[in-house]
Amino acid sequence: MKMGVTIPKHVAIIMDGNGRWAKKRNLPRFMGHRAGAGKIREIADACIGKNVEILTLWAFSTENWGRPAEEVAYLMKLFSVYIKRAQKELMEHNVQFRVIGDREKLNPKLQRLIEQTEQKTLNNAGLKLVIALNYSGRWDITQAMQKLAKQVLAKQLKPEDITTETIQAVLCLADLSEPDLFIRPGGEQRISNYLLWQLAYTELYFTEVFWPDFNAIELEKALQFYATRERRFGLTSEQLEKS
Image (cartoon, rainbow, N blue to C red):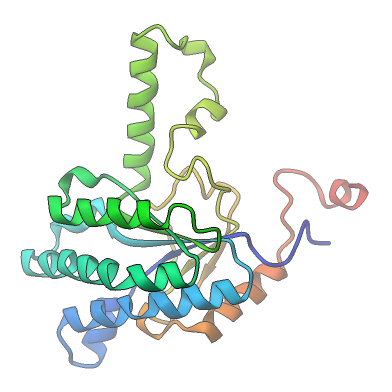
């Protein structure tokens, strides 16, 4: 017996395999990133059609700064172009846009564009599209601990008052439900420092398909997998049946 509805409320995806997709076709890596960016609209539309409420996509990790400088520069430019072009469609489709991650290392122009798009779409009541940019799970937990430490130093909080709830409240995505379904295209079978706290009870789905080839059909396969899962959250199947 499955607990709750069979459609996940929140889907989190690592957009993985762009470079390998390009290499397989003897194309430069940037072509893979460009093809991957073009998939966001299709998957967002498919999520809207399936009544998924939140879609979180990992676009760039804190570790990705170690990649070749030319590739990083291209990605930053690609983010700016994508966000600017998407503004009109976000409004037309009632999508709320937000970015999570450490913005201080992003160039000021990109930071302003992100803030502008977030404000413009703030009151949109449809799909919540979250882009994880310069994000990592360890960074997320570290910045949360720093916030709580400042509250303790300011005597606004006692150390013994720190609970899972107070930690949760200062993490990214604190106001949203935790992911129900995690999807990783590209063949790797790990979560790679993505939403470490939030994925504690998330169903994990891995596929060999590279992100540029991931489409609505592949998303449906992931949703069908999710529908078969029994989400017990530490309870037993018998307890779920009684409830």
